[in-house]
Amino acid sequence: MTTTDPPGSTASFASAPLDPRTYRSLLYLLLAVPIGIGYLVVFPIAGSLSLGLSVTILAPVAVVATLLLAVAVVWADATLTGRLLGVEVSPWFPSRELGVAEFCKQLVFARETWTGLLYLCWRMALGIVALVVLSTGFSLTWGLLAAPLAYGEFLRIDYRLGVYRIDTLARALAAAGVGVVVGLLTLYAANLLGRVSAVVTATLADGRAADDHDATTDP
Image 1 (spheres, rainbow, N blue to C red):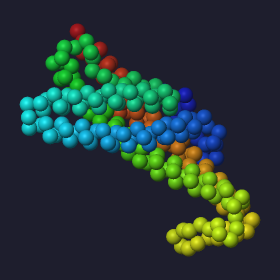
Image 2 (image 1 turned 180 degrees about the vertical axis):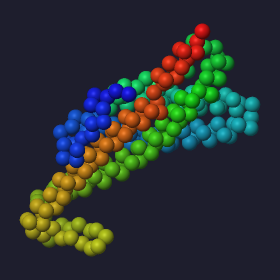
Image 3 (image 1 turned 90 degrees about the horizontal axis):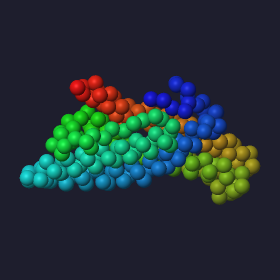
Image 4 (image 1 turned 45 degrees about the horizontal axis):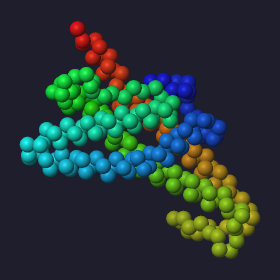
């Protein structure tokens, strides 16, 4: 795996807003929310249909169709991830030069098919995590940063231990300072999630190892 950043480099908490990778990761996470939710809808339905057809003569067709859908989605998703996060990845897909029987055999038994399914599970989980992190982080950030413009008798923050009233300029400025910290934490979390996503993609969705193995086993 190669990326646009030096190996092992990680943006610090304070430098996250200045790291270009942070904003690529933000875009990636914003896309991860609808994509992950879409996967949560589509693949359970596809799996249920395959399970329902498992007692009929269409069982092999259903299994192959579901796996083919998954492999195609992994290929497209990993390609998008590589372009957005700057990670070099070559997604695997069964060779289309094979006959139908060999193609199906490779699709069902190849390790890359099943690591691809793990990758899709990761993407579903990432969509939920991204939704929670971004919505919570940015809503808190903007709310706290706006305190100096809206402080007064009716502005307050409810938290587990009680209520904090922002009714003075000093308290409003303190709230804005907390907002800055929350914003930095959110950007840092986005940067970190982007880096983790790049590693996971290169580990689970890169098919170059399979291509190299096929090349060495060919006569």
